[in-house]
Image (cartoon, rainbow, N blue to C red; front, side, top):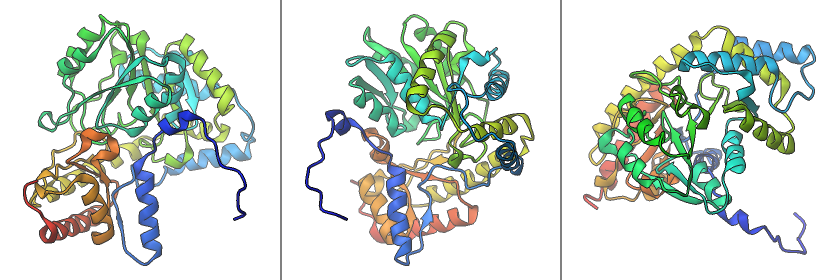
Length: 399
């Protein structure tokens, strides 16, 4: 590489932008593998199943049919219609295609909604531990982050009364995620009902990240958009990555009132122009054709959940609540005497098990690790054995 003659002077806002720990750990694990070490990957949050064949066939045919050019910034009409129909049916509400914006991946929906609604100094409530991009973008846009905690003793359900006490006259947006990353917690109908009563009396926007809504193991999914008093202030984030094993396709969408959808579309025009047309045609096939792959994937994740939770609960120093959705286990490791980042690093380098520190999801994740069970039962059992052997040799007792 040539020597650079000038320093890189970044805008100050870049110092406020965080990152996503899963990709950092994945890169380190790949380096270890390149050096000859075997690593069991339980760090990355993506289904290990193939994209359904009929979705791949639809994309291939779309490319042959010429769907390789620009499309509307808000998304192809046929996909917006399919999303409105599917999402509305699953939530028991009417959704018009004008409320749908298609994006390359689901993350832009959060970024664009924040950019459109949140001013510097506004307060944004968000879960901690929680998906790290929430807090990152709050800081990036100069807003004030106000975290709320999901607690192990509540099986990582939401404390409605505690959250409502955090709302102030400066609260502009409240972020919810159910099923939840990293804990696997699911917002119960009881908690949702308590929240609705309080939220109806404030004017804050509700950002509902529902990307795992079809990966629930007990009960059914509940959305704030189901309640008429909150419908026009609710923004739903959803997509194809988790449900249809399409992480690399980068296909997501947001559902919001039409006037806000127009502003989010403007941001799409100014950033990405549009989402790839042939992937959108594949998205129509995913929504409107055979769903058996989704159901079988959920059943397999449920089987893996049993294996990983039972395995961790047999390890001295580990305590693992059973997740109710998504594909993550979030065991408590406080009794090992290790800090979360320390033990995550050691498990990777010493035991060849890649996982994430709970603090990768915020400071309130200390005392926990996140393991993705998007891997085979065989590999999960091998990983648990490795963790148990490492803990036997390296336990420090009570912290």
